[in-house]
Structure formats: structure tokens, C-alpha cells
Image 1 (tube, rainbow, N blue to C red):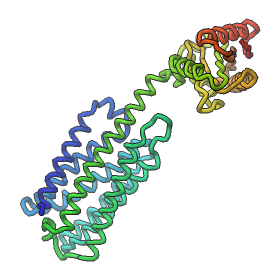
Image 2: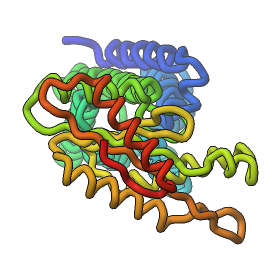
Image 3: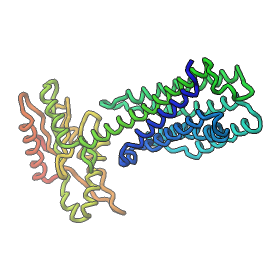
Image 4: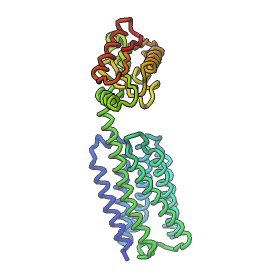
Amino acid sequence: MIDPRSIIFILAALSLLMSVVLFAMPASIRDRIGGARHWSMAMLLLAGASLLFALRDIIPDLLSITIANIASLTSVAMIYAGSRAFFDLRPRNGVLAAAVIITCLTMIACTYFVDLFAMRVVIFSALSGALLFLYGLDVSRRRPRQSGRAAFPYLFTSVTVFFDVLISCLRIVNAIRMPDPGSSDFFAPTLINVLYYSTHSLLAFCISVGFILMLNERLHAMLEHQLSHDPLTNAYARTIVIEMTQRALASGRSPVSLLLLDIDHFKQVNDDLGHQAGDAVLKHVVNTLADSLRPDEPLGRYGGEEFILLLRGAAEAQALRVAERLRERVAGTPYPHGETARPITLSIGCATATSGETLEQLLHRADAALYRAKRAGRNQVAQG
């Protein structure tokens, strides 16, 4: 049967390897994605704890028991703290620190005042299992559900974590049913020891792989968002909305309408308030429009102070109603500047595709309608 000490040495090596992989990520990525630094440190602590555990009876008990338990529990707390940071949840560092300190003090009492190995197992497994269970809940509940986002990394991680929690529960049951007066059987090659250490080592490795998968998915989503969205306003990039329109026209299954929206007198806003305020006005307009749009109505920045909106399945009358609603919404939501509010209005050109019409022709009609709206006095909608 496999020697449990060898399994723990393998866990130490695997944890160190995963720590190196996580620390090897560029600092800019670790700074931008919450939780990356927590998980890097957690794997390093787990590697150190596993090494100390494996050296039991070779080095002093202070290192192989006390320090090892503190490092191991701290690593689990770091894993949970990492999930809070990764999902932008309120940190619970104070509660986590208190839980680890109280648990470690209790385990120290069960080591030096009276040797209660089974009690140490129960206390250690209870806290680590509870923290991992909370971590698994965060991952499973907050996995991305948007179209195009990969959910597998989150499902893989949560299933692995819950399985590790189950192993901790089984270890608690075993410790209660078969209490041992001391820790002499820590490395005994029994079936329960081999099963626990081998399973726990494999799951610890899988959990760290889950970190990397989730970090990679988040990084991919961030990069994709940067490529498809305007960095200032967070509206879609012009090319993305144009591609969506091209596909909608090619499908030919439903009416397709385009709106071109222009902020009235935007140059005057820049002249009066400055370019920084002008940028703020652009973001204000996009946020105001976004509150009135459905998820399937993509708004893109067409250029400067102009925006483009694709309406799938909207015939001429419906497109005009949408345009009028958006115009009224922006006109009724002035831009707050200091103690005053500056009125912002839109001119909107609307065009609905006809049978066989090309994208260029549709854009030309929407653009012509926009200029008619501006020539007619602005703050109105014109049909192309």
C-alpha cells in the first residue's frame, strides 16, 4: 500500500508547482483580476504546510504539527478570501482571521495540554470544510450565465470543492467513531489514511487547476470586452454593431431598423465645460440610453458624439417609437455638472431596411435622416 508520507510529499510538490504557475502570471493581470494573489499565496502556504506535515517525527512537533496546521488553515482561508475578491464581494478578512486564530489556539491546547488527535482532526476538518463549502457556493452561484461565457471552469471548480468537503465530513465521522488517544497513526498505511491523503491531494490539485481555469475565463472575457466595446463609454465598438447589422440583414427573417443618434451641440459642451466634462457627457448619454434598451438592442459608438443602434424585428412604426422614447429619455435626464444640470438632447435618424437593401444603403438613409433632424432644429426624430 502507498505510504501516506509519500502522498503528502507529492501534495507539497503539486501545490508548489501550482503556486509557481499562479505567481508566474504577469503582475498586471494579478492586479486586475481579484483573487489571483490570494490563490497564489494559498498554494504556497499549502505547499509549505504539506512539507511540514510530511516531516512529522523528523522535525520538532512545533513545526510539523502547530505551524503546519496554522499554514494549512490559513491557505484555506486565503482560498475563500480569493473567491470574495474574484467575485467583487465584500471581504470578510476580520472574520476569517478570527476563525483561524481561535481554531489554531484550540488545536494547540489539544496538542500540548492533552494529546487529543481525534479532536484536532475534527476541529481542523470542520473549519476547512466549512470555508471550502462557502467557496464552492460562491463559485456555483456566481458563475457567468451570459451568452458566450464559459461556465465549465466554474462548474468544474465547484464540483471539485464540494467533493473535497465531502471527504472532510467523512474524516470527521471516522475520527468520532474511531478516536485515537494520540497521533501515532498519522502515517499508518491504513485504508482510511491512504484514501484520505490520496483523495485530498488529488482534489487540492484539481482546485488549483480550477483557479487557473476561472482566471483564464475571466481574462478571456475581459479581452473580448475590450475588443468589442468602446473604452470610454462602454458602448459596443462601431465594427461590432455593423457586423451584427450585416448578419441581421443577411438572415432576412425579420425587419431590421437602424438608428443613428447624435448629441446636439456637443462641440459647445466641450468649449463650455472642457473635454473631460465632454467625455463625462458621452458616458452619461450612453448610461441613460442603456437604461431604456433591451439586451438584444446593441448600442455602439459610431464616432465622436454619434451612436448607432440596431433594432432587430422592429418595423418602421416600432423603430420610430423606440427612437422617440430614447430622445425623450435623454432630454429628460440632464447632465449634472456641479450644482447645476446641463440639458442634453439628441437628434435621431431612423431607417428600416427594405427587401434586398444593402448595409451601405441602409446606413446612407439613416445618415440622411439624421441630418434632416438636425437641420429641422435638432432634438427630434426623422425617418429615412
